[in-house]
Image (cartoon, rainbow, N blue to C red):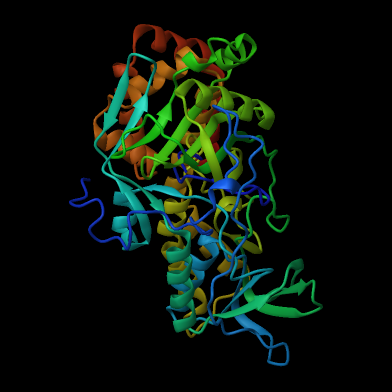
Length: 497
């Protein structure tokens, strides 16, 4: 969840991508996270916060760059490719890696292709394990936990990991270079389309042509078109990677959600607001003095104010006795969730946040994008990798439906209903919901969070969830959710027609 999936605010970003792994650290290069600044610092330079009051501390890390040699596009060369990918985030590079394996000519265009990604990504270990990417995790927690309230805690036997942004980006770039992908350092200003070819115009005056343009530049892109109102819910969070005097969390457990509100006992204004629109803490303890902490609003519409998030986090850390000595990184995270899919098909293909793959109920995206990119690449290869060279409208139809076949669209509608349900729950209702959710058979809650349940399984999941819910929670759902349910059924009918 943006928690369950986070980030210095660049357009909109994500932070987390929110079975048993035999050894939590066996295959990892290090159990410590990679820090972009030196840990060596003179004692007199440390500006320690008062308990909980960390907001005056400035993050020490600065934007960095990978030390890699990339094959750059030469404007004097013939500027024609099979596929141009706008953006070199995780989704863009993963798709470039996969498409280029088929011998298809690919160019990635980005203002800064070698910049470190600002986002902190958290994923379930089994997801990256199935993708062959587990070596890209720099820390694994063998268990996760969810604090329902001050008296109830769920311990989840599902390992969770933090993605090493440096290792993952380096791996993807190396694979792209091996497959002869070209890179161009520029910002795309405009995309023009002809019947079988499209042209991008860049801020450096260059023009590049391709049979297919793929937008992987993030939520703020204007190149992908919608034909319905974008009625998003929003996940917003503030996070810090911090050196602290101490913290109360177990080092072998990642804190997925902490819904406790005892820290607001002396904050009546914050407590009243939190009882209506709750936030939770997401925490990754790396050692006894290094921890990632993030206060998160799971979903709201309109979006909860960022200043409110920070005030609640400050009160929480003060209550927990966490004194922040240094802020190494900070994150300002805003993730649009749910809403309509882009118009399907259209001339510009999309991958990542702008394509609608963010989990509407949780904010998870990174692992899912990594898994879907090979499917999109296969669809592209069936058109551009064949001797027939299928281009134009048949190409657009093929690739968009490769990403969003009917079954996947219907499953997404169900998850959007889940988001609409969460929007209507207060703190008590949210606690009851997650208490029932994590009581389910792990097959269901694992599958739901990882977007791998079929439509039939989602129906069984909902019946099981209703059966595990308390009477008050069932009443809450039945009284507050008829309108979202009718909307979901209507959208499902439209998708089938």
